[in-house]
Length: 268
Image (cartoon, rainbow, N blue to C red; front, top):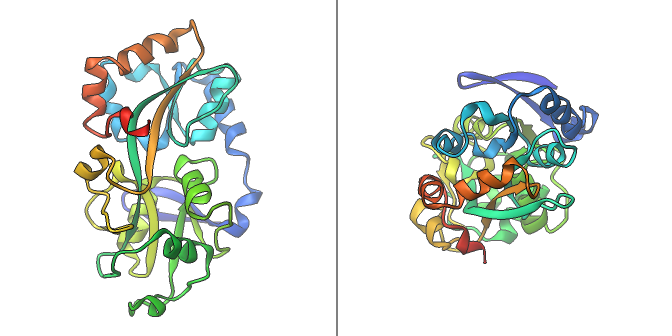
């Protein structure tokens, strides 16, 4: 493993082949949540949006930013009273789960990569390692450089369950600890391809057209994109999380969430 400096922050990157030797993210997050003063575990995918939700969720109530699996584990173990997650609909004990928004999984490449519209099958072949050189797709960028989020993140779950259909990632895949690390790597590596929530897209990368549609904000807010993803709150009945859920699903909460996500009705 190596510590690479991407952009302004230091981010741990490791190959998928060595990822299994690291500490379990859920256990690490659970210990951190036990010591935290906040009562809500928040998905790291929601790092950008969390500042706009202060009306419902003051900063002092946030226990920290976690992988989605770790946030749910913290709730199940009683370290926090609610978890905000991004990805598939969560299942956690007897917790109540409510959709609070809809987002999309966007695939990104370096701006110099002019690959045309892709389908999910081509994306699957890229991330599984079946296609390892851009020449086969008409681009003179050399080897395909894959970068993925870590196990336990909602984005990784969507990739594996929906795109890879249960298959594995290529052993050459680089694993990043944040969406920012994925964006920085792709922006600086012409042969790279990665994925991030559409809500976290920024300049410096090119979002791919998938099944004829790009993950543009208006398309995502209308549900006009093939890989729509949920944003959720999970909480224990009768606890403080119930009040947070009411706020987030009320007029003020939904107005603030709409700055980042489409309406939860898109998931039904």
